[in-house]
Length: 87
Image (cartoon, rainbow, N blue to C red):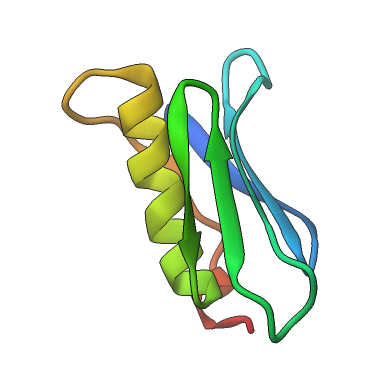
């Protein structure tokens, strides 16, 4: 059985991540920061921006923002292995 997540988080560069729809490639949530010592700012259309102090918090906030922006009660997101551990 193959499992295909609805969304995936992609690293654009060390200070930019996007949560994408796996079917359309559309960006649903963006997380950016001004540098490694700066907070992450997480944005999604129709949802107030939030901040996170570190990458793990940003990933959690991205999934919450996607759920708020898209509605519904659950969905799946693929996170690259080791991403939570990066600065």
